[in-house]
Amino acid sequence: MNNGRRAAAAAALSVLLGSGMVACGPKDDAKDKAAGSAPAAPASASTSSSPTPEPKELLKQSREAATKVKSVRVTFTVDVDGKPMTGEAFEDRDGNCIGWIHPGDQDRIEFVRKGGTTWLTPDGEFGKSVQKLGGKTMKIAADNTTAKQLTGFCETGLQILATGGLSNAGAEVTATPGGAKDVKGVKGQAFKTADGTEFVVASEGPAYLLSTTSSTPTKVDMTYSDFDRPVEPVPPTSGVIDGAPILK
Image 1 (cartoon, rainbow, N blue to C red):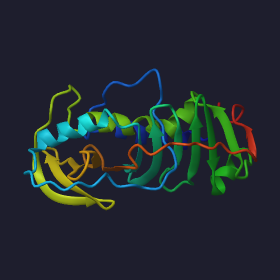
Image 2: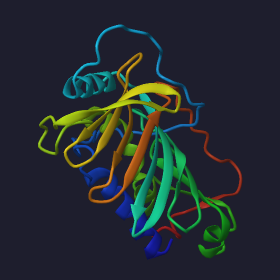
Image 3: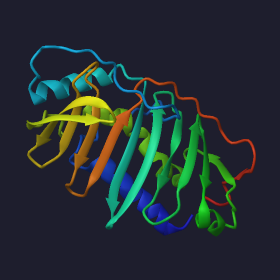
Image 4: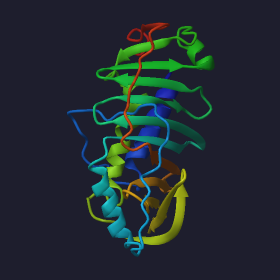
């Protein structure tokens, strides 16, 4: 793993965790948050004739709904030095994580994290460039520095749901209505803060946070779906090599 890729991954994570989009919030030191692979599912639909709550109230409802969420899929695009870094992680509260990361103009890396182990499968030339890995999967301890850099956003989805609409100091942000907006087929209500950050909260069913978009200090787009779907990571069983000598 070259230093450029490590730096790009670390930069993306710092943006996701430190942007004005959400408060960093306390981390769960006992368990990593994780992701899995399951088909997308909209929030449960339920019609209501009640007026739309004020932005602060709806964002508060979204944080309350987040306390009951056991898993979520987070998909993101973040600008890193003018190049988009994309990724996806389906995470749960038990430390399971399945997803992928595509660092800008570099090759995509798929990963599975279960318990204290991470499996990383790079594709294309990336795989060949790491000691001629040739598409094999690297098995490595989840607390390995590079593994943490490449899968660290697995720990942000549930965290962001729990802190959406709060400043880093824990205060509620001021937001103005932005109108109705659907996210992946789920009806939502958009709100914008003074710095231009947009939140979209489900307007039907549980008040889940559906998406966040920020352009300060850099452009970050994130969507949240597959709430409470089971996360069932299946580590690769063939073509697996020890990643410790490679990912030092």
